[in-house]
Image (cartoon, rainbow, N blue to C red; front, side):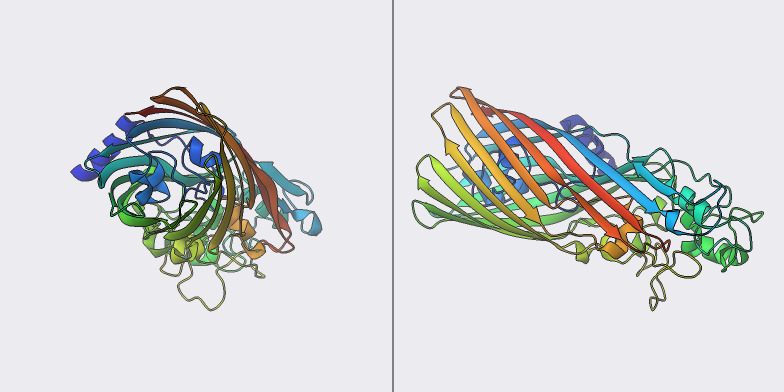
Length: 475
């Protein structure tokens, strides 16, 4: 590890934004909002900045929230399930007969801290930093759904195990992945006049990733497929072949860190005393590659953080009552590891899509999760009840990133959520301090397919709840 990377990792740990494992977040794998005040508005803060985490949505907002420090934590509970219905198959099984392979991912509670601070240097110049969990993916299945499905559908013998699936020994171990992303956003914001403000944030990204239990897919890697031509040919059986050589860069390699940088710019315009507009755009955060998993992620382990942009409008019907509407687009299709299609069903089992010559895992066009770009729509209301209390509520809807044809790999990352509702409040015990609270419910959403890459029906689903708490100190 380079000295710079080591220092950055130390900053992560010292700041308290440690890599507490994040589960699949709410808009694909990005979180809905950053901090308790933002989450109370369902994340609709591009034109209505709230606190020193404003740079996570619109860096221009750092000039409009005053001098303050905000420290918060999210208690996040996602419920994830995967199912492969092998009962429709007539194949034999080590388990005696086909059955419904259905498991709920374990570990249902996560803590996610966040922090921000702003400082006024002059009447027009403000600086600050926002540190937050950008999002992540997590699943942890006690039983390996891929192992059990392969055992049900195919007799693990050299004459019947399909290419790319089935270990023969049915012991790939516990199945799951952990992906955590934290962003550090040092920010400069400039108020040109009473109506126009711009801001720029450097986005410093840190990722940590691990995968386990993916042994069924060794034959879909360059090393595994090339090293074991007979075992990986149609009718081969990797687990039953003496001397089978697995890929050393696919699974069970422990945690690995990745580092990178990008840029976010934003604008806020006070069009009238009642109407505020906001706009922001973030580049892709270009990350170093996961070398230990270079035969899992496309482009030899590349997993950049997607670009995104957002537009917002806030209308104050009275000095105490505001309504905000926001549109955001997250460009998942710009990251091949996320957007490249996953395996398809063939007579020999899961296999790379036809017509992609370098479609094996880890290659430039290697298989991925098959995600599409996501459009997010947010609507929120904020009401200053009196000088001590502010009330918030919001709803959000996003398009589905996962096509039904991509269910198999997304058992690892069941980011199916589309609808959210939030509520929250701020209480000010003194003129220089605040307590903030928000609750979010993401409604259960299921993605089903009549034919997964195993050739049988499968589904994934998830719902979520979260509570945000934060304390704010006003300077």
